[in-house]
Image (cartoon, rainbow, N blue to C red):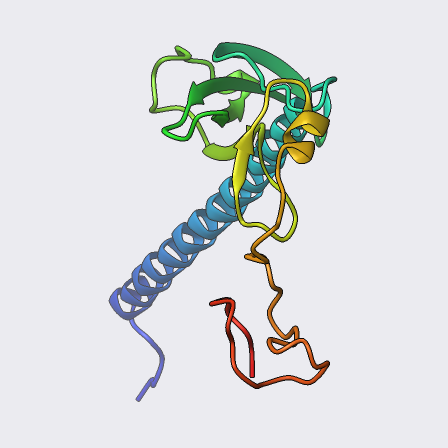
Length: 184
């Protein structure tokens, strides 16, 4: 008696192998697309962070804040063209603005007002609010930080640093008569 496989058994085995291989290829393709998307998303975040840093470093005068509004641009990064859209909006705190930068690959295209095609949005802040060291008092100034600093005084010692002696004896501990936080 012949103990070989019949044609039907061979065909069923081939169908099972083909279905298994197609599922494996689908999983590998999906994984490769996810890795590529995450790489592009990381590059887009770097482009956005670079744009925020560029805005901060191009402010020429101390205390200067960028004007509110929208700007667009393109940049080459990681052998690819990227399109960014920057929106500068006033915050609820006077003298501080929020910078939102959206980035997508240039070839993706789309309308700048459409939120569907952007790979990432990164936000940063910049402003001219300044606290005098040791006071905790915030002063807002317009292009003259020296004036803001000279108008503040620390007469009631409200800016005691954590860990500083509270009883002026050079030792930690003791009574805290100034009402300042002291680490003991």
